[in-house]
Image (cartoon, rainbow, N blue to C red; front, side, top):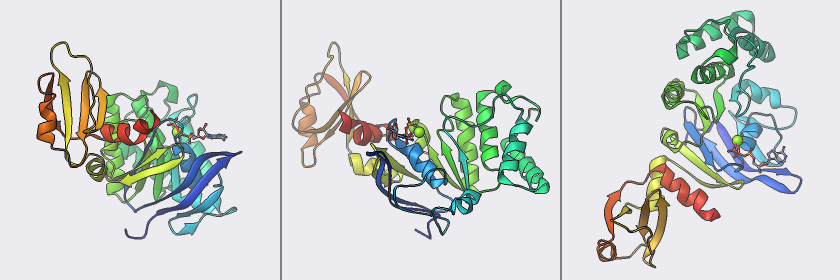
Length: 303
Ligand SMILES: Nc1ncnc2c1ncn2[C@@H]1O[C@H](COP(=O)(O)OP(=O)(O)OP(=O)(O)O)[C@@H](O)[C@H]1O
Ligand SMILES: [Mg+2]
């Protein structure tokens, strides 16, 4: 990797004696769309808060755009990062303009820089409403797009988006991801969390977190290949069959609605193994999705 713009080394965040983040290391390249996935409580938001300079790590090193992160240097880091938080994005009772004004004041932007950046960002998202619109009256998708603009107002190199599309309608989610891709194409580094696996396919690389630990970091393609090889099968029950008896040849046998996704162990003669099931199931070879990877690596371990 060229010099990373985010370099996290052995980061732990400890609350009392609870490790919210445990010994996590990863690097993000400039211009990358880096996805952060994990079940609720995995430690995603906590990690992001450290990387934005909002929470000190308990152990380890964080280097953002070449700057070491140590107490008292938070403001250097804050210049470099934008943050769209998970729960709070904009003040609902204020107008769009007032939200921008407030962010500009917090960031200490000159009036000229503020207005030029606001204009450019609103053009970027194709904002058609009035600046006087009170945020609570904006459609949910537009609200999130305005929140993205506010997080980018000081023109940071890196932007952290914590579940920016949660609860947003599918069409608006697609629009939002178009914006993410445009930002990355323009050289910004985008660090994004989501619970939507279809969205995660758009990331260049993905980090999977489970119970505070990082369990995999790779491209969506590599994660799929490493987890499933090239042999995942979909079993659809025929007729009255309602269950499957997994045998010792199977490495994976996960229920998916009324189907099962099956992978055989390495070295198993798959043709012979499949024969046993052909009477009861319609069987087709399928391409694994990130959903399969997630269930296998993140949720499968908790069962
Ligand atoms: N200030 C705090 N004090 C104590 N525990 C905390 C604190 N902040 C977070 N935690 C705990 O740390 C763990 C990780 O929380 P975090 O919010 O980082 O998870 P997450 O991966 O973002 O989850 P979600 O997908 O629900 O947003 C959780 O068990 C949470 O309860
Ligand atoms: Mg979170």
